[in-house]
Amino acid sequence: MSEGWGYEVTSADVVEAYDRGMDAASSLNQVDAVYSRIRQLIDPKENAAASFVRQSLQASMDAQASRIK
Image 1 (spheres, rainbow, N blue to C red):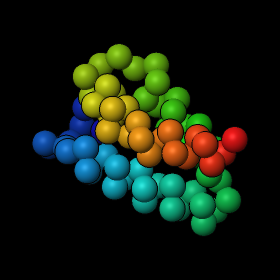
Image 2 (cartoon, rainbow, N blue to C red):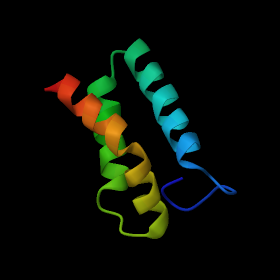
Image 3 (cartoon, rainbow, N blue to C red):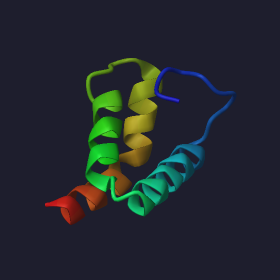
C-alpha cells in the first residue's frame, strides 16, 4: 500500500491491514519487530502513497509505540 499499489485503497483498508498484521505479530511474539518494520517502510518515503498510509496509521502506531515502551 505504501508503494501506491491497490485500487482506491481507503484509510480503513490500511488500518485493517495493520491490525491484522499486528494480530499475527502478537501471536508469534514479534510485535516489536513487526512494528519496527512497518515504521521503516513508511517513515523514509515521501511519496503520496506512503504519506497516505502514514496518516492513516498515525493513531494506531502511536498507541502501539506507547505499549512497546
